[in-house]
Amino acid sequence: MTPRPGGSFGLACPRPVYAAAAVLLGSFIVGFDTRLFSVGLPDLRGAYGLSFDQGAWLNTFATAPQILIAPAVAWLAATFGVRRLLFWPSLTYAAISLAVPMVHTWELLVTLHVVRALLLGVFIPATIMIIFRNLPIGWWVPALAIYAFRLTFSLNTGPLLIGLYDAHLGWQWIYWQDMILAPIVGLLVRLGTPRERVDVELLRRADWGGMALLGTGWMLIYAALDQGNRLDWFESGLITCLMAGGAVLVVLFFLNELLVRAPWASHKVIAKRNVSLGILIIFAYTATSLSNSQLVPGFLMSVIGLRPEEIGWTVFVTSALPLLVTTPLAVLLLGRLDARLTMLIGFIAFAVAAKLGMGLTTLWAPWTFAPMMLLQSIGQGFTLLAAIVFILASSDPKQATAAAAYIQVVRLGGAETATTLMATFLVHREQLHSYLLGLNMPAGGANTHSALDRLAHAFAGSESSPEALVARGLSSLHAIVGQQANALAYIDGFQMAFCIALAGLVLVALLGRVPAGPLSPHPGRLPAAAPPAPAGGRTAATQFPAK
Image (cartoon, rainbow, N blue to C red):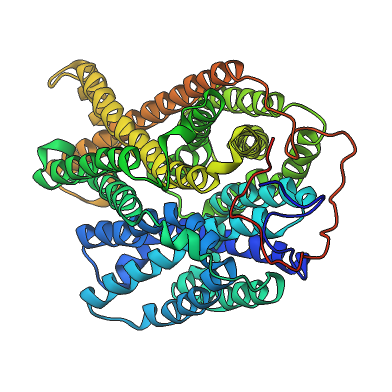
């Protein structure tokens, strides 16, 4: 299962530049679509006339089905070929994106979002398969950098694009942008990837049960996590059933993989020390990077009261643009230094950024976050790429599709878990700080009366009755206490991000050295040209080199 010298594992790309462009654009479609939908959800609720509950469920229907299909995509690509897997779905995705803004019924809206999410779940795993099956080995790390870059770049560009669409083009372009981009991905795949035969042997040994159990189980858990805060977790019978049902299916999946003759995603792939620690490092990265993607925008919008378009430019300049420097720098470092050093630099940057965030006050404006977001861009550019390269370099090439399945579970399930845990943490800390601040304002206390008098006096020119002035003063005092409680909760959030970054450093310190291979550092290594494909067709389905 070794690659051709200097080449790829499957058929060589006839036009590798087109294939690399397909990886770039396909990755960005997923990143921008997911981020724009989450940031623009309030506008979508208004446009469709949805209640808050309907909007929350629409978000779940638009994201959870991704994890149903994503773990199996690597196997599907190895069996049927990347071209078959991406071309027609990209055209279907474009057609659905065109139709969604024209829909006016709730049932059809949900149906289209579910189908759209299933198609969206194909893009990232399939484009990653282009890297390992069809691109020359020397292109692997730069192509993986595209994947890591699109995730962080789309997170930091989402508020800016939502502001531009809302002010100039209309909310429909949250969907219609994909109507333009998705067919281009299909065309690039058609031009840049080879025509591959169906692998009949893989199809004959298909572990359909394992794929169904893992995908369905994690989809149920994902839905429970997405709705948990709103429905008060295990106080809700629905959340309890979703979580329990998902957990049972995942356990049955592992039992299935132990019993079947040809397991699709054997647990042995994550039994290696470096691989299991690498997966934990990706989760730590996801959690600590929330200081950038969740805490900063959340504070500015929910506490300060700014709209996405008012913070978008600042986030773009201080977080997104620096990635154009930090990501190529990470590629250069990975070609010359141990990936563990690159991860250490990234986690240190995250820790320092979170420490700065712990000095937060309600006087902070968007540009006050600039030093912190610049440091976060270093962490985002260095950590994820190095972790992915390290996991792939440590993996057994014979268990390639299994490794890809678990990476997709971590990508989607880990991100939702980290986001949900942080949101739950913020809610509970805000409630605690509201209570503690309230203890210092007893009813009838001198300080409380003094504050109410000052606030009521501020409305004295409005010709309101004395009772109305007191009510407005009381409402203002309540808002001030709520704002301060939220600010303290976000400070606690940055403190949690700091602790997770330190935990990431400990995990990196526990990693062992990776075996020598094409993903280990080689000073001066340059991308190798792909040689002509052999007459016998593609090689066995795998992603990683034999070591």
